[in-house]
Length: 87
Image (cartoon, rainbow, N blue to C red; front, top):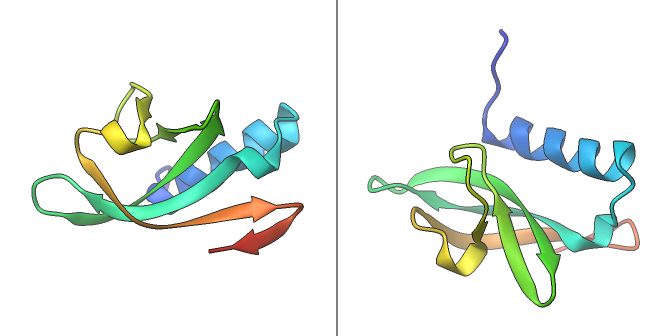
């Protein structure tokens, strides 16, 4: 209680940014991958702007370009196009 896992944090960020702040849902993706030296399963939310995806990762206070994230390797992503889910 009072805590969540990475999927919870990613969904919370998405809901706040899209529903509360009115950001474009088509610029976000849920990205599943491996994190850290032990390659632990992890999910983050990304935001795409100017052709780059930025990781909104609950394990760090910094925002990194997804392809330059120091401790996360993408396996696949789920993104939204006009409220439809695509892989």
